[in-house]
View 1 (tube, one colour):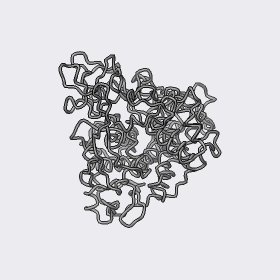
View 2 (spheres, one colour; view 1 turned 120 degrees about the vertical axis):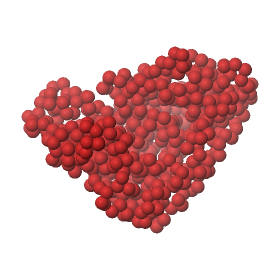
View 3 (tube, one colour; view 1 turned 45 degrees about the horizontal axis):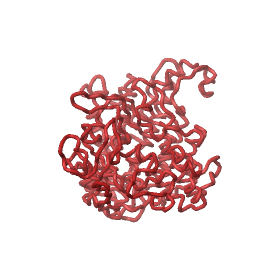
View 4 (cartoon, helix red, strand yellow; view 1 turned 135 degrees about the vertical axis):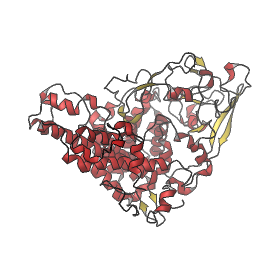
Length: 584
């Protein structure tokens, strides 16, 4: 890990600085130009590890790509190495973001934001809290990507940096242990939460000013200037609490259980987020369709739907639809859901389709199913953007036949399915009449934290106990399935049948997590932290007339050591004290 990380990151963001970097501004500029401190933190924000594109789902049993040059497809086919993987940019960007945060933290006490002492204090609190929150965020993603068993047999993390480094610093140092990294993350998160408001909203009266500021004479106007709604997409207390819950779930999981994180503590961290919205009672009724036209806010809107904990700023775009609409809708059909994922959706009555009580009909496989199947996946004969999509096997005769299985290389489906989730059907990619609509990248949403709680609570206390909390894993899963429209006519008899069995509830929770979070770049990491099967063949459906035949589409070739990712080859070769994860 070279000291040049800072320069790599700064070279890509020099438009943040005024005057430009060539004018030799450095971190000391903060002491005379307070806005430069915020710009340094802005560089940490630019390097966010989130994407609106479901990129790594195509390396799991949930999807394949019809772009045969896709790097994740290549990895899943057995070509993942420490030199050819996709992790090097993440290693660089996470550490660069931490470097920016550390620069701010080192200089912050010397920066004056206002002659008004109270305003100055609040700006210091907010920026320090944001920087610590971002440091925790980046540590979480580093541990998820690079934490693993070293060649020594120990569970290792990454390097802990709490001070900025420069070109003279010795970087040839050993990795810190996973537990030490986790402890650093939790400490940063705790302090950040103590400094930041739970959310950024405009107060309506002086009586709402937090006591620690009210005691100093801060009024509503000054408070809103620092912590008001215009700050809404920056790190706040509940965002940091959600990151802490994600990290705890990772650490408690089978692949990282040597960290010492207890399932009960992971459940408590998730509940800390959920209790503030009333637990299960606060679940958004439309949380499973957060990406749709009715739910996405306009770019100028500072408010969020109940489902969203953190998102990027909204903006008009069309790229998701251009990439993922079927060819007849002027798309490239890039992400193709698998038969594996389709089969994971239960019947409408809640029973898995391999259970006779589901009444599953293999000759009419998409009827009488979990409504989320139709919401998330385009199946043969279903409607999308006002058109009927025919993904069966047929030879192209005219433009209406382009959506068929393997009809058009690089554009049509390889599995018989197209992705519906994430896209807006009121967007039009037609080159002669393009219509863009607001989108935003979801970073964290409440359903993910509900599912984290369910998983951890089930492991800690069993399906129906909530420990010290007023809701259990069973309560969460029942609410999620009810929201989806599953098991409404029979009281969700399947859920009732497994609520006394921890192992069966674990299986159900993992499946609900798979369905609710599909195409959100989560399953690739879930399978690894669970030590689950990484090599399930990706399958599709071949439809000819009334005949439905399941076909193999893509073999997965992951070795057992690949539950942990590799550190970048260049750094391990360059620095002799950096221990690679075993097997790489």
